[in-house]
Length: 272
Length: 331
Image 1 (cartoon, rainbow over the protein chains, first blue to last red):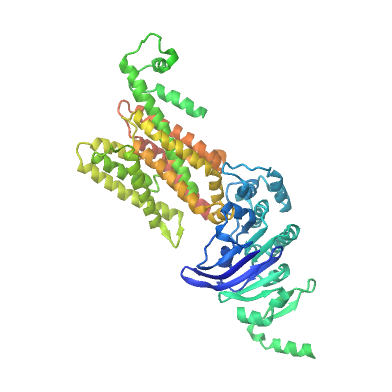
Image 2: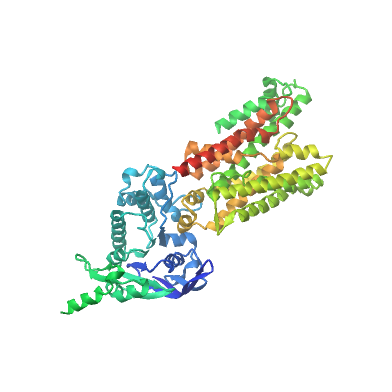
């Protein structure tokens, strides 16, 4: 379990998080949503134990996250970054095997044989044919798959995703989140993802945490959190919320300003 | 390794004193304890040239090259900057200021034989900090800005050393030759001085080889994989500066070794620092050995400063790297 307690954080002197508290239970997938600049990525960096909050603390399984030795923390928690992996000269397999670093001693060798883990990760991400290809010969989508395979090789129990779908087209977005969701269910992982797309967040997450003005504006299951009132309050835009025809998850329909009155009309019609 | 051995053998055999190849090896073999009782057929002068001058110089060239190439590898890895090396970062010049100061005021022995390297290390570190400070804007270091800062500081410090040279009369030659890099007039003492630095620097960098591989992906990636980023940076930077200072204390400013060698090795074996680090040490040794052999034999009996030879090879290579980088960004 991960807990953030009364977090206060500034970014370049600007207050971003003001006394934020939230907690994340084991085995569930969370989406952190909120408008630009609200501190979603800042929060994720605090949860990953790299940055130190100005006030407050982050606890991982009841222990202050900054007190974990870095390698031990990396065996528990892995992070997928928004920027993805750079096009370097290493091969796909070499990069994926870097995920084993937290399990290696200072001489760079590991007690158990890691090849099986690496092979499984490559296979899961459909990278087996590309394993000897160099990273600088891959597309952005393929590199993001390598990044996820590296995460799998790391065998964490908590994964943090920082806007993992930003640079992907919709096909890859769904593919990536499908993979993460399947992996999460199989290993009972805790997933915390900063997501930009409210509809994707609603489709894939067990719970959503909505950030607004430095604190949590709402948290809970998507159908409880995602309401027209909340969207209006947090994003300052009018939207209709409908049910997904297949999954039943709430989906946001944006609307131009000129249709602002229509919400009322629709509600009246529904009542009739 | 084989290349290194062959280079040492060939280089030992060439020289301006006109001793034949057979005699050189006769003298060297004669030094081996189990062959020492054979009748002596060489003059003591010849023996001195081979054992005292040439052998020490050859070994010194290998050691200096290894130190500089290792330092370059370390700088490039931890700064993720393909143009970084002790010379372009100004660390070599920084070290030389300290060392020149010591030589000018005749303080070489104030702290024993370690005086010059220690002072050179201090001024080298200060220079590196200065270069970082100059190139940092909003916490980000641009690759080109870093090198530009290095070059600015380097030329400033170069002027400073030249100023010191013009102040003094007696030691002008010593400082001047050393400013352009040279291995002439060195002795076994210098070899013994350099060895411990290499003996510490090489294993330390080797241990951090895998960390440097992860650095290639970016500092945050490395941190998320369990690397203590700040500590790694500090240790690798200190080791590299220390290796630079040690090399500079012995040979003066020899440019571009730390730039050219890691790149060549990378072209040969790929991006894995666990291979690049040891091979750079060997490659650097071979490179400086050949450069020095060229320096002492090309215009024999006159000597070309070693720094001139390496710059003649290294500067065009630097230009090539810069050009290739531009092409990559453009396309």
